[in-house]
Structure formats: structure tokens, C-alpha cells
Length: 384
Ligand code: COA
Image 1 (cartoon, rainbow, N blue to C red):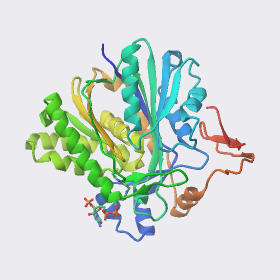
Image 2 (cartoon, helix red, strand yellow):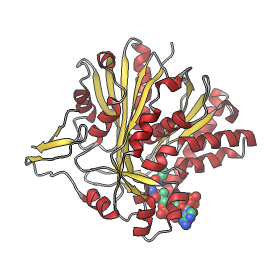
Image 3 (cartoon, rainbow, N blue to C red):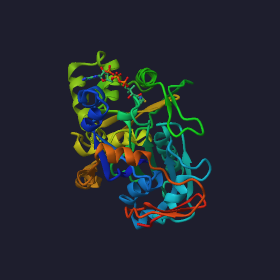
Image 4 (cartoon, rainbow, N blue to C red):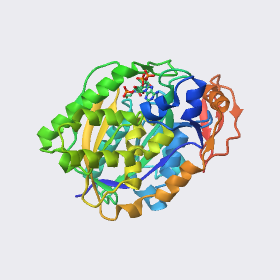
């Protein structure tokens, strides 16, 4: 039985800041951000939107009325939860009108949560081939104004429908995993922003990639030649390049050229959006599918990394006619219609927070699924 991704879509908020403007405001050479980190624009979220609105908007793009009857599991991978108990998944399940007899929950391990959700979706469909699983990776990457992490912020969500009718990609059932207890990035309770040792996180990311790449070679008898493309978790788009550089010398020039050409296609969207934490790998996958030169049967290698640190390398195989199931024009339009913020507007939005005093407040954000009211610390969402 084939299991895989039947549909995939992303959502990003309507606002962004130009990295050149941010660099000038922080008195940094803009090339540090454009070349040194590989980022051109950064998505910014109003305080009246959150992982529920991001995830619901992404899922709304792919879930049909028939799917809503067949979805038997909804999983949200995130590290931006606003509640330690109630899951964002149940709010999204409600907003989308998915049939009620669905296993619905949230899952966490830093930027790895989306992959954990995707693999659980695979296992569920293996046991229940007539059912579908909605996987959502949604996050808000915020490090604080004028911090080293600031140019690696961003936000958004990717939604994937996993089923036994994989019209886009099918699983190759070849995952290898690695875990190491390390403090490179963590967010203890009570902290609005993560604590991060950025340079250590870069090191552990690359070391983890080499570990799972080597394990993959050994366990699955694969080499670089087997892959049409490699995609990486993208906290910023230079990061995947660093990982790739660590294995490049072992491959032929032809393999290097092919994989690097596809890498450029895989980072197009992330350059304009920034970090989606759990969704970053999958925004890269969307970009590769939309812009890459792929054909049926091609093998894509995916490297998922979650600080703390866990990682997984696995492959997905391209299905025939996959382009027919993509939303390429709509994806471009979503990015093109965004509003560019001034630095002052960005900083104002950045500092705004939902009231947390338990009172009743109403908001006039008319965006799809935006928070329309908070009362007694319950968020009420606008139905689309
Ligand atoms: N032109 C071109 N490149 C430039 C430059 C310029 N004018 N100035 C600096 N650079 C390059 C640096 O050489 C460096 O490249 P390298 O990483 O290939 O060596 C890159 O820009 C970043 O410079 P650096 O001085 O290391 O930046 P920083 O100390 O401000 O921090 C991070 C960078 C990524 C560590 C920081 O943004 C961060 O902590 N981010 C959050 C954590 C994260 O994203 N981790 C990733 C793994 S999960």
C-alpha cells in the first residue's frame, strides 16, 4: 500500500519586513542578512493572530468537504503553543468543521514536531487505510528586538493531508533518527522568547545531519546519487548550505551541482518568509515542489532537526502528475499581496500582546480566522 501526501499548502500572514530595512535599523551590513543568513524578507504576525489562525488558514486551502468526513486524526506540531493544556489542534478541528470522531492533539519537540506528526500520520494510515490525517506544522519564531536571533524570525504554517491516495509524494519507509541531550535552544515556562546559544545550535544541526546521513548510507545503502534533491530544516536559508557542505566532498561534481540547483528552488519561499520552526522543512518542500525540476519516481531526502536535540532523515518519492495537485499560482499570489511594514510598524506589532488579565476585549482584525474576542482567557476566533 502506498501512503503519503495527498495535498499540501502553506499560509503566511499578510505583513512582512524587508531585511535591508531591518539591517539598516540595526546598523548592520544588509549583506549579512541577505548573503550571510540568506534571508530577504521576514513575515510578521499581528497579535490578533496565532498558531490556530495560521494552521486553520493553511488547512482551509486543502481540505474539501469530502476530506472533512474522512479525516480521522488531526495533529498540530508546534513550539508556539499559547496553552499548556488545550491543544491548538482541537480549535482548528472546530474551525474547519471536521467530523467529530477524530483523534485530535498537539505534539512538541522544537522544530521537529511537524515531522513527528507526519510520521504518526503515516503509521495511522497504515493501520486505517480508508482514513485520512490532517497534519499541521504552525509556529511563530520570535527572538526579541535587536537580538542576534532577530533576523532569523518568521512565522507561518504548512498543512498536509496524509492518506493512502498520495497524489504528490509517497513515503519510502526509510527513516533514520538521532537524539542527543543538549541545550542549544530551549524555552522554559514563563519565557516569552527562547533561550538560545545560536552558534552551538548551528554546530549541533550540522553534526546531527552528518550522523543521520551516515546512518542512512549504512542502513539504507544509499549515496548522494540516489537523491534528486535534498531538503533541510531552514531556520535561515544559509543553514542547509552549511549542512550540505559537510557532505559535499564525498560526492561527484555532478551530484553536487544537481543537489545545489534543487536547493536553490527549495529556499525560494523561505527567503521571503523566514523561520517557521516546525513548518520550515515543509515550506522548503513546497518551494521545491513548486519550483524544482522533479519527475515521477524521484527521491527527495528530507532532514528534520529540532533543537534540544533530535533529528530525522527520510525520503519521499515523487508521484506521477504531482504538479496537478499543487497550488503554485495561489502560493505566489499569497506572497505577492502581502503588505510591507516600516520598521516602526514592525516594532509596534512585535511588542503588542493579547491582554492576559482575564477581561473581555474585542478586536477588529477581519482576516480569516483572526481572534475576534478574548474573554476569561478564552480566545474566540472569527469563522472563515
Ligand atoms: N556579508 C556577507 N556575509 C556576512 C557579513 C557580510 N557583511 N557579515 C557576516 N556575514 C556572515 C558570517 O560570516 C556568517 O556566515 P557563516 O555562518 O557562514 O560563518 C553569517 O553571516 C552570520 O554571521 P554571525 O556573525 O555568525 O551572526 P550572529 O552571531 O549575529 O548570529 C545566528 C547568527 C544564526 C547564530 C543567530 O541569528 C541566531 O542565534 N539565530 C537563532 C538560532 C538559529 O537560527 N539556529 C540555527 C540552527 S537551529
